[in-house]
Length: 90
Image (cartoon, rainbow, N blue to C red; front, side, top):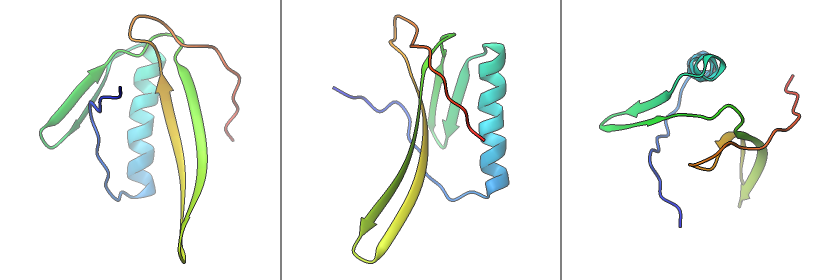
């Protein structure tokens, strides 16, 4: 069973997206909790030292429309750490 704790989607400038990702990266680096807020939604997450990091690039075609996406996902067991992995993003 999957429960959505927080979800938001909005068009943002690349600079604004970079600033949001940078904020998450800064908190991950120093081991602080990450709080997500939008409208009346708020959730705070404590990411463990070794979460599983998934990166996915997708192309979705519906008729004549093509949508590209890149997803960054952190996963971990609520009661444990994730796996170590080697990834390079350049």
